[in-house]
Amino acid sequence: MLILGSAAVIVALAAAGLWYTKKHAVAGNPQVKSQPAQEENLTYEAKYQTEEVKPLPVPPPHRSLKLPILMYHHIGEPPPNPGKIREDLTVSPENFQQQVQWLKDHGYQSIKFSELYQYSLGQISLPKKPVIISFDDGYQDVFDNAIPVLRQAGMTGSFAIITQYPATHSGTNFYANWDEIKAAQDLGMEIVSHTQDHFDGKNPKYSAAFIANNLAGSVSDIKDHLGFTTHTLIYPYGRYTPQYLELAKKAGFTLGITVHAGNTVDLDNLMEIPRVRVHHTTTLKQFAEAVER
Image (cartoon, rainbow, N blue to C red; front, side):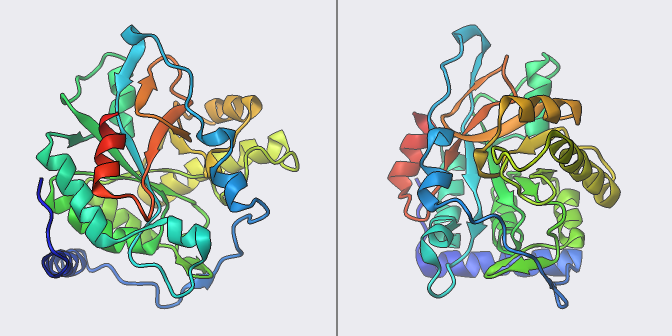
């Protein structure tokens, strides 16, 4: 495996990032709007260490697919005094580069969620060792730091956008604007829904009408800004109910992505797809073990 030193990684990322910015003339967010904080009524443990992360039932072998779907949030350095959640959600550019390089060195080829769905219908074949690299929330640092690394490795990523958040910020979380998201799409990256406002799908205060309107609205937002209809939904916090799943299907979603731990997809249950979460402290050895488990 190839492990680059810090200096080499920084130089490579800087060069790639400069090329990406110049090539696509993507501006930052000079007049970024403040976004009300996402729901923080759940503790860290309640969000990420509950039944939402428990493995799903093992599917029958003839209807299962070994497919690690990596889950990232921030790619960058944590801000000063980040807090437990923010730090855990942040993977350094150096670690991310090493992880992507490990995937490439070990024969993995990236695919998109849309290709997973086509495969489930028997319409296409997949590489021998497929992987999906997903990013939740649409943070600015992911577009700045992850895309150059993916492009250098010849890989794609799937970016889940909270569709009312582009060009806003909440605390230390800054969200990419629609121009930057469109530039990523033009480079071959996949854009999917993460709802309109990152609501907790298990919170009983949200009515069926609210859920239906929010999910359909996220599809419309992406259609309006990017010109296509997404059929993939990543559940905020991984929290949903049976009613939520039915409403998601009615909104046109055919794939639902969870935070359940695992790397085997049940091709008969594409509304509950597990992922492999990458933490701030994940070592390359732990990363390799999780991918190949």
